[in-house]
Amino acid sequence: MSSRNGQLSPVPPGRWSYYPGSTAPNALDIVWCRFPEGEQLNPAPKSRPGLIRRVMRNPTGQIVVEVAYGTSNLKLDRSIPHQLIISHRKDLEEAGLNRATRFDLTLTKILPWSGGFFAELKGGSGPIIGRLSAVKRLDLNEMKKDLPPPAALIRAEIANSALAAATQTPIAVNFQPEVPERPARATSDLPLP
Image (cartoon, rainbow, N blue to C red):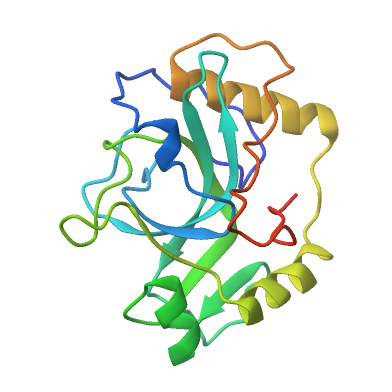
């Protein structure tokens, strides 16, 4: 389910082979993702970078993540709000990206943390390819001020609908909170609202 238009849509459940919880990403990690192309919760044939916004556990303890769409199509000829562009060499290196990338912070999906949606970029490296640099985290904090927060009820319905589809489990409105950051990570790296 996409959060771009804020509308709920039915998503058929699938059978996912979840990664162990110990491999879960952190908010603001960059992952290699088969981001679904439509409203259906199906892995896309093409992998692309994704920006982890939130990490959550479903009632059975499996990890699901909210990921923002990434593309090398920068669209520099137009001013698009809520876009995070990584293009400087040091930022690209820390993010694990080999080319300039734009993340659309309004186009997100809640996906199961599984091999069906997240794959290795290079053999043996795992699906987490990098992390936002400190400079880009500051840019993101500035952008968060302008991101329109959805109404609390709509946000809960969207999250629960997507969680239920991603986990194949009917979920009540009060899902479990985000997985805390690993101790090695800076605690100032907060996920987007």
